[in-house]
Amino acid sequence: MVPFEQYDFGSPELSPQSPEELHTYMANMFTANFRSPATPVPALHVGTLVWEDIQNGTYKDFQRHHAGLGVPASDGDRPETLHVLWQSL
Image 1: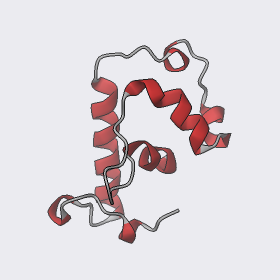
Image 2 (image 1 turned 180 degrees about the vertical axis):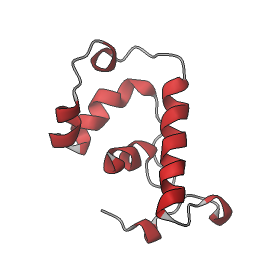
Image 3 (image 1 turned 120 degrees about the vertical axis):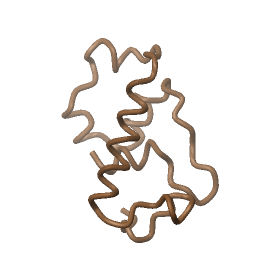
Image 4 (image 1 turned 135 degrees about the vertical axis):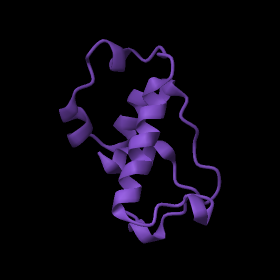
């Protein structure tokens, strides 16, 4: 796991400076992604994805379940949004 202090969120002025700011950043990102119109990702909508799968699964499992959401991949030095979300869970 990459230490919080080493993450690159893009612009320094937009980067969280404390754990509280990181929490707010992640909560806002999560809210924005899940307020979007529903996408056809069966495991997310029919209840076959459960909390235990997230807790005990690998990142590849998590990535496979969320592949249909179209979350953009990393662009250069920025960490992948989906990977950051998985690590925070």
